[in-house]
Length: 268
Image (cartoon, rainbow, N blue to C red; front, side, top):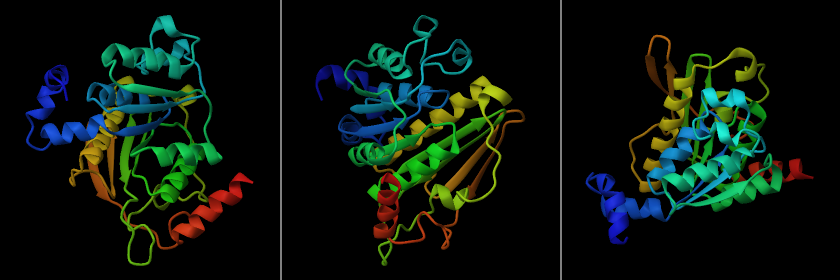
């Protein structure tokens, strides 16, 4: 780090849990963010401000006037622009040292697998189950930690699924997103466009995702790995629960070879 970086990140460096070595880990890190909406906005802003070396921004959408109530990375002047371009411009203003790679398409299949493979941590800031299941499978296949967030109306949640530590049989020892919300279950999917969302709630959840990602990159053991944090912003009730791995889970219950094979079949 040069003198300017030592000054920029001095408040991190003063923390004994981070220090110069931890900050250097952030500078060398690569994070993949899926979705630049309500959750991805604060997550990306804090990761850039914290000095994460490379942020890969994935979103196929453009900025809409109705987004501005909660998607704080975007501006009135960027309405109509691709969200990744709008976000990239905002992040450059905050920290020009951070490399932003923009992917202005809905990622999936082989492209998603490749992007996950290149990342140290993946943030799922999407707003639909199909994307969440696809990102979960890709992170399982590539053994990359996943920080998952969701928010609707006044309720939000954050979980960390760290797939880097396999058990003796070669399977991941951690539960996955599919263990929490099985893909074949019947679940109502609520969207902000039709049900609404409290603006500060997505800031709370997205910021928590950024915090968990930073701790994973630095190597801190304390956090939400294998846990579910739920937040109700109406009465400010916050609860943390332990998650259990489902031995019958269709995503992580099989071996790594089986999981990768399933993804490969889906690509064909």
